[in-house]
Length: 479
Image (cartoon, rainbow, N blue to C red):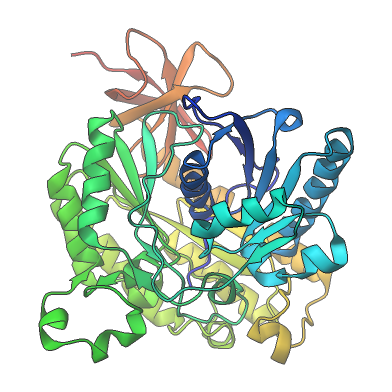
């Protein structure tokens, strides 16, 4: 798969809350780590458990049920979760009736280990088993350990209306696919989230319309690999060729889905994540160019600039093919922003491979980046067949060089906006000053500007006067 768009791990997760639902007396505390898919899954879980009498809370001490939605992409993420579980258990000593559960990718990967060896949790539930939570909760209320980590060939939660947790009322996620077929050698996701299957496009369009009617102004279509979206009536993507001729002839791909959503909510901003280079079609790029409400931003993970390393990672494209895709993006959508995922120090990486990564970055000059040192994940093909042979100090040095170059390119891209007027969707207060608004333009660049009579959710024209490598600074242009 294309490595997922990771939420900064320095944060202590995201404690999630909903408004009180009348008649619900039990308290649910959910904390999410990892990717945007995990945040969306937490919203699905909150919806399922709301039907079982649970309101969510941000106060850990008052919770009847504590769930941590986990990530297994890197070892650091799992270490963070273990530390949090220790904290949960210290609170549980004060409140013995509290029950603790692990959900998400780490639950799927470790399965019974949490219950048998670590004994830190009462409940373990994998990403495809959230509908079983009512039964699992009943089991732990009866004093039993509860686990369901069975992967599904069909589950998409397409009929579950997510509870929008800690929402700013402006932006929301819509999950369109689950699972991944791409078997990158470094990645655990195919083993923790199963094979690719897509959600009925009608349910996606209906959710987008509902969000617009509720006042939302921006949606992000989510999947481990959105470009693999393919609806032919249900089932795994790998079984598409076995479907009937009618099903195949009427199938909806990602470009078709985006067009359906763009037409259904023409004033809604539409984003998507994450893309996989070998699956992104020219049709997707032409659809982005055709509709003004589809944001001009693509998160396009590459992981390395070396064709040799791409082959070892099983990325199924070469450096040259990736560069050709970049050229097509620049040609079809000249003002499109592009961001990356990069891994420093993958198994067998030489200094020449690292220099290939730096030279690819110079070619693209990414707007943003998500960069990490390689950490071996148990159970992956790389862990089974390759030696993690790049010394830690070398990984750190190469990562530092990648980050430094990205900061240079980020500043270069941000400076292109200085002196221009851009449309900004206001999302809330600036982190540094409640006298300033914060929002993003279509290229996903963050902008701040002094407050006037605007409100959250407004689209405004802002003249950019200055910038840092991460933020545009400007003043609103009034008509």
